[in-house]
Length: 284
Length: 251
Image (cartoon, rainbow over all chains, first blue to last red):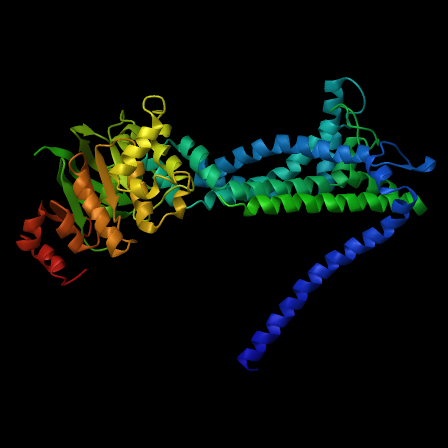
């Protein structure tokens, strides 16, 4: 086969794959939208988005409590995970001796591969009883348990991407800082972290997306009551959990309302990624 | 003339590779000393031993001593930050931080905790004037240092090094990525600066060494072959290897 033919063929092949990936995304969005329409027409977007009552048997389909549940657990998880992950990334990139790093880094990366149901299980068996004892009431299934489990789940993502970005900072920045009498820590804080800021932002955004989308582990530790997360020791429900818990028994408008939940999740994730992209592209 | 820096029997190893062999050298105060030699001869390694930039290289080992005004900078009680405060450095690639021009210049004073002692605006102006960059950037101090041309970036790096008021400035092939006009400006600058500072420059460019330096040391395979006044090294080298190198027979 002539070379130019192979060249053109492969170019067209990968183009088709690329367009297919985009089309799949569009189709998914369209199907979610189509199945959402009955509930959107019947109940109305405002009542679904800002309704605080989710009583499918009474025709109340407000998802505000779940929206709050997802946002609060995610923010709390990030508040725990980001400092830990940054510390871990700095340790791996700058402090750890090569031998320690050669063990720690693969261990951190292995954490990504553990199925979320296992995290949920550990949360259920270990964390929830501990929180129950700490708070003195309930089963321990709570916003706090969910946030801690989520934090552990997003920790490796944020750590490894942040470490890669810290390592990618050109060595001459570091030398420049050292030559000006900066200590190692000053160099990390004033030169390396700012230089790696965009990549670290991307890492946090990626972690946020993962946290918002997490389902199985959340169902197992958050208690799943569709109420506002007023106490970190109390239960709540996430958007993802709402779908997973009820979809098997839902029909009609109820089922359609769950699709609206999915639509809101979809838009939420797109917003987060959009913000991430803007933050990533902003000039230094 | 006083020796500002003296090295005694300086050996340096990268792992099993010996990069410097018993280098003994006196560097005179308020003079420009050029270190020349072919690639891999150890001249850059030598330069970096003078402000302990090699400290962070894993498996590297140094023997011998470097005296700065008679103080061995490798003595265990010596604080490396103190050494680097007295011995500034300019690198081969201009390496301004991705910060504003202003922030670049005050970086050193800030890190050393000198913010309160002097007015930072004065430090910025003084340093940029000394490096000949002031008139070009005075209305744009908030502009990113990375947005300057290569020659300007290098002069910003010189200003940044001057801001911590060092006694010595090390320059590691500071013109190798610059055009001839920028190179000339840096060479003129070295002449202006030597009144206040002691300058050690590593260069690949023998014309540069001949033009801009007062003393020249020729390095070959980790040894310092010959050292003397630049005019003598280039007109009457004593060692055959020096003669071969400066007449372009190798390297």
